[in-house]
Length: 147
Image (cartoon, rainbow, N blue to C red; front, top):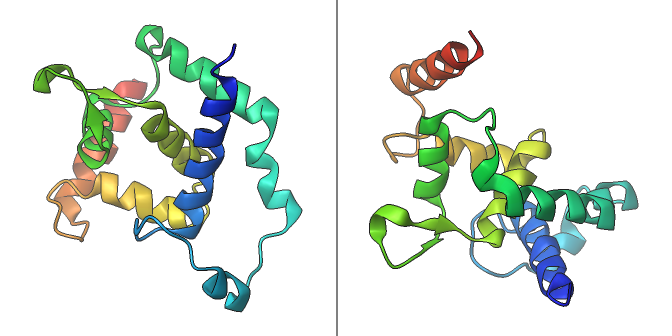
């Protein structure tokens, strides 16, 4: 596949920016990384492995046929927080960048940046806070889907 280098570059870029640019400024300060209390070690780079890339690319290419475990509301919120592409506003699609961000946030959910990303998705009112109703709604939908 001749588009593989293109997709791999996107894959690495989204993982790096999710974790090092949680404010979504579009740039990462080298100085702030040098001064950070915790410096990334090589074990944290395993998510950039070629095997992880192939797993995500395969999921992305088959996502229309996948009956995943995400609730419709969760997916709606993911789409609401992502830059989407498409001519018809009702048929908007998530590109590979957005899909990698979703995967990175879900699979590294113990990291601060991933938690921030997930909270933005869970913030149904887009007010910067999670209230009881928002939490109940998300938990209730997840519970209902498992029954």
